[in-house]
Amino acid sequence: MLQVRGVEIAYGKVRAVQGVDLAVNAGEVVSLIGLNGAGKSSLLRAIAGLNRVQAGSIHFEGAPVHNLAAPEVARRGIAMVLEGRSTFKHMTVQENLVLGGYMRSDRAGFEADVERMVGRFPALKKRLKQAAGTLSGGEQQMLVIARALLMRPRLLMLDEPSLGLAPLVVADIFRLIRELNREGLTILLVEQNARQALKLSHRAYVMETGRVVLEGPDLARDERVRQAYLGV
Image (cartoon, rainbow, N blue to C red; front, side, top):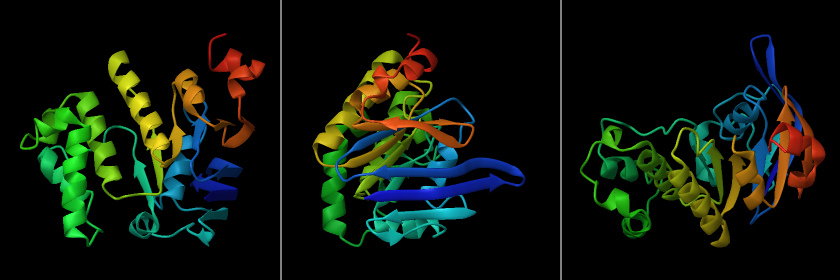
């Protein structure tokens, strides 16, 4: 479904991503782990059309998407949940959800999807008229995931979805990711909680200083990963 080949991304003279290869097959959960500054978020933002690719290519379902504008990437079927719970804080929960359908023309289908979404996230249903900025951190994260799902993506990219959340909320986030994947959604996940990420992933990549240094289906058994990221 997604194929990244030799991608390089730079901010001025700083090379954030250096020749990265990565692939995601339809129906998989693929995790990307590594320390802060490794280039993980830069890579996701490039796939989503938010960062410019200096070299290499990104193909989605066989078609090139590198350096397309972000709205066009979204129209192709890729949705991204940014790090930091990017709600429109002064807008209501309902208004935030409506933005998830700004590219959809099937009004009846979208309204039905909104009903299903608030059913899936009961905390949001109780707060539809409430400003998004007044929600708890966990509720805001659920809101931005719900908004992304309303785009009906075929690939969902999540950047640090558990960051700064309470343990019980983190467990809910990972349970949701597992459920979405069981329903057929393909997911590319950047996550600091390496233990949980590796547990639910079909395959994973490890990035260090802009490069992929390890990849495979069972990295939780790799001694280097166990020492560096799992505290074993």
